Picture 1 (cartoon, rainbow, N blue to C red):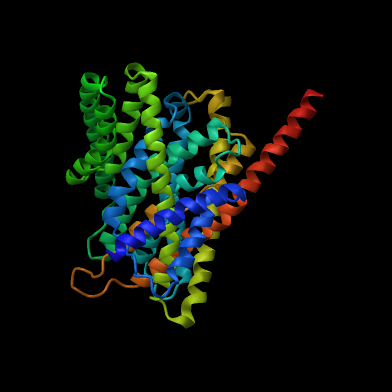
Picture 2: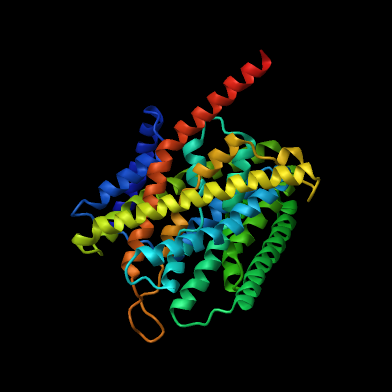
Length: 424
């Protein structure tokens, strides 16, 4: 009963703070995170532990489904080259880069543990970026790339994390086996999502006159699809994304306008509540994990988190601007059917680079680290890895989150001035 009251209190606080953030023109994720940190330091408050399995089941399916459902499929295809670069190659590049820095920076850090930390922090959280930049006038291209990246990169990060943890717990890493398993996970998730999408379309064709039944099926199916995919040991993330993309195209052909609007209203409320809870929970974790580190080591580990945050930002900027150059060359020499719409300009590349914040997925897989190895001994450096992960998540969300709106406004103002000069 006590925890139930705490959850209701957090929900009420989250709704109230979101309204205040709108009034004072502050990105609401930042205010919610700070509130979460403050709440976590209340001595009489019972500790709220995040269960990674609950996080993945409760938060990921609806958020991924909503993003996939609302993304413009034609624009998604146009920017598929950039999206796949950010969501796959950049994830593994980031994991490797963080691993190298962690290995040489942090005492007692082995290569296996360094790659665990790298995998945890390899995926970005575009939910945060979109929430922070909402209403700032981001181009449709930028939104599509950020949302498209978030639809796939969680799957890449989870695969990298699984292999990294396996190497720590005693499993032998074989590159070709890992590559094959990655392909099976992705292809299997795609197949499950396709089949579940066809099944849902079959059902909705026959019940779409009943608005409540239709919306209920659409609310339920992302969770069912995710569970089925995970039970089959394939990517639940990819399965839900494919489901959302498929039903989005189907709904445009079949659903009447009033059904679309009512469905959107319900989903908007659900996504608003889930997003708010995510940001408060992220803040709540800091006071808890700080207790697991010796007081004399806290500032040292905060320093490690800050250095890793800078490294992740630099790696992302380097990869995004390399992609900009790659697309320009491909378009110039007519390679890979790159269209003019797929090209990136400096402003778009800068905003995408600065939008690489870490979020709930990094937090959940960090907290989900095994307690012990196969021989029963404690998982080495578990608490420091969790603390550093939470530190990086907070640094990116608060640091980049506070500066991203300013950067977007500066870029839009600069582009507007440039356009005026060109016309005159």
